[in-house]
Length: 199
Ligand SMILES: O=C(O)CCC(=O)C(=O)O
Ligand SMILES: [Fe+2]
Image (cartoon, rainbow, N blue to C red; front, side, top):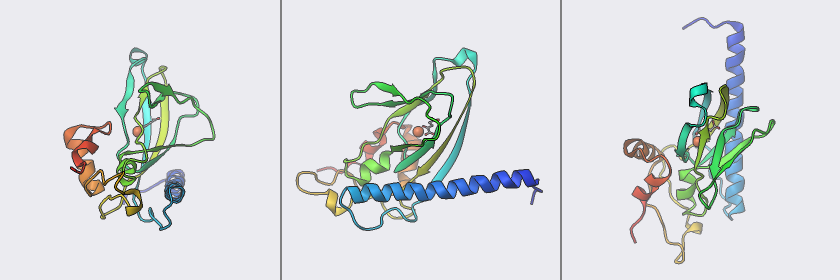
């Protein structure tokens, strides 16, 4: 076991506490979303969360280009704590235009991914987004992803399925879907087309 200095231990404890709290928050937001859509049962307890700290080092010669290519997040819901000073995040609106999300200290940004779209039978939208290199500096963001059920299949609850809106996707596990996205390199939501139900 490597020896950890007290300061490093403190940092580790802070990160673990943050990750646990944000996981709880993500499940709570998911639950409220489900309740708002008329579902009563508890849905997201036990769905795993992945936590990532992004550190970008934008150099003068790369300013103006894309730091993170256009993509959707593969999981259900993402909570993003963006850099408080350095912008660059852009989300795509319904018309296909990118809208800049300016830094707003003290706020968290929530966006929905591919699993939300499949789980809701298409009612919730997965949001395309990217990061543009705006200035030559370091940019840090913390992304926490509520992924999908651990082993069970992603399947829309019966309340979201009727004759006007038949089941759009075959049941699939998050892990299989993640592998599918990776192998097909379809990172902007198009991999969902590969799990569509044929009617
Ligand atoms: O750094 C950001 O603002 C966004 C990062 C992101 O989209 C991601 O990690 O999936
Ligand atoms: Fe993302």
